[in-house]
Length: 147
Image 1 (spheres, rainbow, N blue to C red):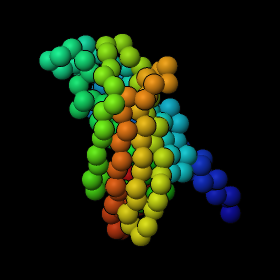
Image 2 (image 1 turned 30 degrees about the horizontal axis):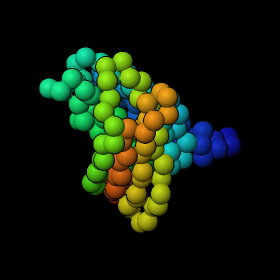
Image 3 (image 1 turned 135 degrees about the vertical axis):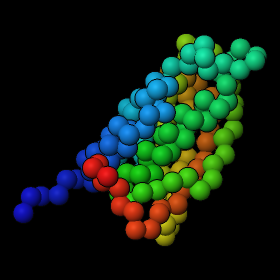
C-alpha cells in the first residue's frame, strides 16, 4: 500500500486544487504562495481598477484577499469548509501598485467549526488590515482535488 502524504503535503495539494478552481482569485491576480495544515498565504498587487472614489484601494478587494487566504487555510484539512462569518478591520489605506500579502492562521477548530485570523501586509511589512473568519465544515462533502 502506498504511504500517505505528510499532512502539510496533503494540505498544499488541497489548497492548490481549490486555487485551480477559483476563477475570482485567478482573474484578480491573487496568487497562492503557500499552504500547510490550517494556514495559507496569498498575494495580490493593487491595480487602478481596485480603487475607490478616494483613489485608495477599495476595502472590498482587501477583504477579498483576506477571505481567499482564510478559504485556503480552512480547506487544508479535507472536508469542504465555507465561511460562516467574517469581519475585517482596515488599519491603513493601500495604493495602486502596493503588493499585499495575506497570511491566514487557524486559531481553533471545534466540531465542524473553526476560527481563523488573517493579517494583511504591504510588501514592506506594514499591517494594513486584520481579518477574523469563522468557518463551517459541510457534513458529507469531502473535498478532493478531482471533485
